[in-house]
Image (tube, rainbow, N blue to C red; front, side):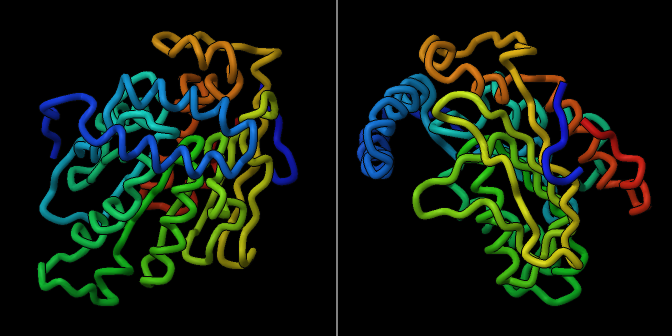
Amino acid sequence: MPTPNETPSHQIPSHPFRGASHRMKKEFRVLRLAGSRGVVVILILLTATVLLPAEDGAPTHRPAQSSCILIGFVGGFVHHNNVHHGPVFLAQHMHQGAPQDAHIQVFENRHRKTAYNTILRLLDANHDGVLTNEEKTRARIILFGQSWGGSAVVMLARELDRAGIPVLLTVQVDSVAKPWQHDGVIPNNVAAAVNYYQPHGFIHGRPLIRAEDDSKTAILGNYRFDYNQAPVKCDGMPWIERTLIPGHMHTECDTHLWGQIETLVRQRLEPDPTSLANAPQP
């Protein structure tokens, strides 16, 4: 059982390897900075690259504009529609019962800029290319991600903060930052944030997040999951992940964990903000 810590438009590519070589070289340079462990990690992530070509996520809903926006990021080099990974699982489940104007979309973690531009476009109700204060304040944005995707959530939240756009909730799952990223401090535009992590293996998530300003951001909790004691079933995952990073892998496929996140997300989207008081605790 988890315990609280510290605080309670998609086209099929003509060839699956198109663009993969460039991405592999770029990310290898990134991981090499991490030392010898990066060499092992690159073997894991290249497996995902070969099997799953990268491409911007296809939205579950496609309204012309929307104030209800759910953006997810997958980790590593995982493809945006890989159903074995938690952010995709959550996006698919949120399709049922989501607000009619909701825009739900999952991106590869390196496509953060595309996600940012998507949000700007969706908030631009009059399509004049400029966001007014009214268009910004009506935003109801939730960001969620796992591994490198968890770090992408915080990076995107900061970019939205600089644009004056509020965020209802950020969710990080076994968040892992790239060398130039900082995923531990939640910016002031975020109303609430929650962090889930597991401590085992040489790839494991950040155990603690904190608010830049406690008066503006509520940290709902930093919750620890121990899959050595309570493993979960993971179908369809590469053998190399099963062998080298089983704990980190479990956070991708733990449907119980992602089900709890789904409940929290739905409550944050309810009109009554006091519903948060009855939010389920892991």
